[in-house]
Image 1 (cartoon, rainbow, N blue to C red):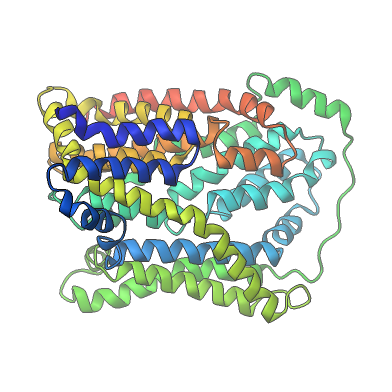
Image 2: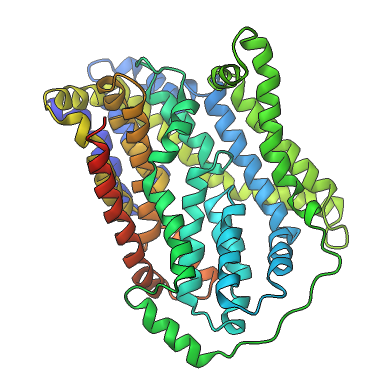
Amino acid sequence: MEWLIFLPSLLALGLSLIIRNAFLALSIGALSGAFIYSWNQWSEFPAYVFDIFIGNHIFSSWKMGAFLLTLQLGALSALLDRNNSLERFFNYLNATYEDKRKSLMTLALMGLVCFYDGLANSILLGRVSVKLKDRFAVSNEKLAYIVDSTSSSVACLIIFSTWTAYQISLIQMALENSSFNGQGLQILIQSIPFNLYSVLTLVMVFIAIYFNLNLGTMKKVEMAAEKTFKAKKNISHDKNFKLFKSTFPFIVLFLSFIVFVFILSFFKAPEASLFNQFIYTLSDNSIPWLLNLSAFCSWFSLLLLREKNLLTFKQALISSYTGLMNILKPCMILFGAWAISNVISDLGAGQAISNYYSSIDLANQWLPLSVFVVSCLVAFFTGTSWGTLALMIPLVVPVAADLGTDSMLTAATVGAIFGGAVFGDHCSPLSDTSVVSAFATECELKQHIKTQIPYALVVAGICCILYTLLGLFI
């Protein structure tokens, strides 16, 4: 009956395919695991269920910090949208362009600026991009590709997105019984260069724009757009636009966190070098609250610098509250993910997989590649990147931590999982970012998926080659 320890993961995966609800699928999977774990100890079942869903998390600074940070970034995103910050910034940069390439490059760069949330990126960037359609004879499909490919990719790579806290919390839980316990943020940072799919997808976007690279049916729709639309003249500058005022909240978001960490590091590791102080402090339990403090400072600076002719103080607060409430439902996935991670750990599924890999001589070499491929498939068929992380990280990261003599294998494995999850976001017609990107750019979902898949497959193929080569050095 050893196979039962994998039932929660399999059940959650199967339900994700059927009901298309990540929280419900993860929760049912966790409940099935609680049932197995409490077998012959039914009196402990209610208490165990409470612990895996609430009790084990409510007093965790990392988990509650993740929950609150995600809510704060939801409020920030809504206020940015209501304030027309990104739209005015894009129009400012794009006003005098007569060249299609420059304008699309600007659109892609805006995707990097809108790093804080993949879904918000798709909505906001898609909304401003449609103005390029008839001005530069760009197809809806090309706009959807640029918007979608920069959304989850940059949110998964950049520290300070709605992904970050979620990622850290899952990694922290997966490493609790390993030699890397408490190093969730360090592993996350180390995994960034190993998140090859996200990195190369962003590179591919700029290559496709610069060289006008149209793969598959993208060439056909771009030719059709050139016949349909005619280029228009320049649009006028917004004379009231102030560049510093528009970018200041983003500057605050990054720099305030660094300043806060350095201040804390003087108390935590006063005798270490400046760099080592910073790295050491990143594992401190105060870090989630510093992340939240930085997010609050960014939101508050935007509140003060808002366009007062567009937003009164009361309207700004209402918009922020609306954004917070809108992201509350997706935030519930956090609790489902934490619950199933707890169950997987308690049942020993990760340890069982670790023991299996330990019996294979080439386990270290093939782990990142195999994890990337499996994550791509899970994300594609379920359509949920966060659900993919919740299923893969607790199963595989403990394996990497056990097999690797240093943190390189663990970081590479985490990066591979992230990349596979983002691949699903780009290729699955069930993905919320794919749906929103298509809707926001006025593109048919079927056409968007059809024209984006060739780019995603090329990048994924290159990733497989690189992960194979990486195995030679691990």
